[in-house]
Image 1 (spheres, helix red, strand yellow):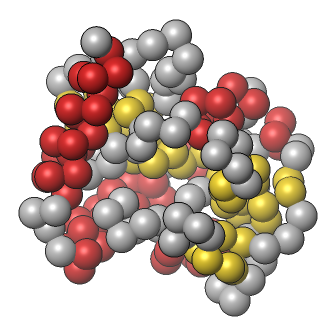
Image 2: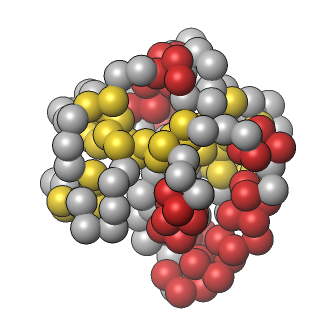
Length: 180
């Protein structure tokens, strides 16, 4: 029953996203990204996990570049199988290849010093007030987030993705905070 509820929520959130153009979502991303930039936990973080946004996610491309220009270590996730993702170092805007999911992912070696990550910005289909996260259904982040033992994990979504309640399972991992 929980799985059905999650599927229904994903369908509902996808329908809400389709009401906006990519340009509108980029514009709606600006105040959210500003809140990330002003976040006290980010201020002193040297190693930061971000994500290279899809067209229907909070737009992060400028954030990646800005923090990289501040000489921070920027890490981005890369899907390596149907069940796993790894992190890779962001070097520059030209060091990407397009994945099978159509996501621009950095090329290079896997980053494995997870304990050095101080701040992690986590996308999601939806979040709730209990800091629960609804992903796209593959479980990549649920398997990966427990490795980030020292990172302050911040979920980010558009206001229409912040829901009253998300059904959870034992394997679901909460974020420390959500920006919406």
